[in-house]
Amino acid sequence: MTLPVVFRQSSDWNTGSSGDVGGALSATGVGSSLGDVFPSAVSDFIGQPDNHRFQKVYVFNTGSVEIENLKVYFSDLELPSQIRLAIENASGDTGTSPSSLPSGYVTGDFSTPEGIVNAVAIPDTGLAAGTAVGVWLWQTIAPDLPTETGVVATLGVIGEV
Image (cartoon, rainbow, N blue to C red; front, side, top):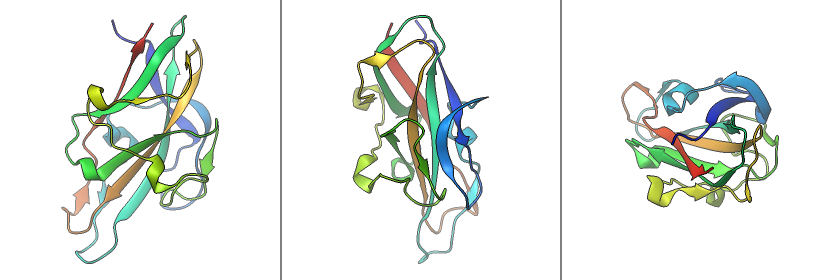
C-alpha cells in the first residue's frame, strides 16, 4: 500500500545564493527526486572549498488517518557524500542563507540514510492526517566535478497506516 504523503516546499524556498531558506509549510508541491529540490550547480576548480546548499522540504500526510513509525531515507543515491538530511528541530525553523547550516543545527544533526534499512525515524508518535514534518536537505558539491552537477537521489518515506 502506498502511503498517503506528498512532498511540499517550505515557505522560504530558495534556489539562489542568498536570503532566507526553510520556514513554514507551503502549499506548493515538489517531487521526491532531489534534482527537483536542487537545480544543477557549478563545481569549482580543484583546491577550492566545497559548495554547500540547504533546502527544507515537508512530508505532508494527505490521508485521513495518522501514519505511525514514519521514517525517511534516500534511494537511488549516486554519490552518498553529496547529500545528507536532518529532521526539523522546530516547526517553521529557518536558515539565513541557503549556503550555510540552518539556525540551531550542527553538522552532526545530518546523516545519509541510504535505503530503507537505514531510514531515520521522525521523532514523534506519528504524523496526523493533514499535518507535515520538515526535513532539511544538505547538498555538498565537491570541487573538480563536471562543470554542471546535480544530486542524483530520491527521498523516500516509509511508515504504517
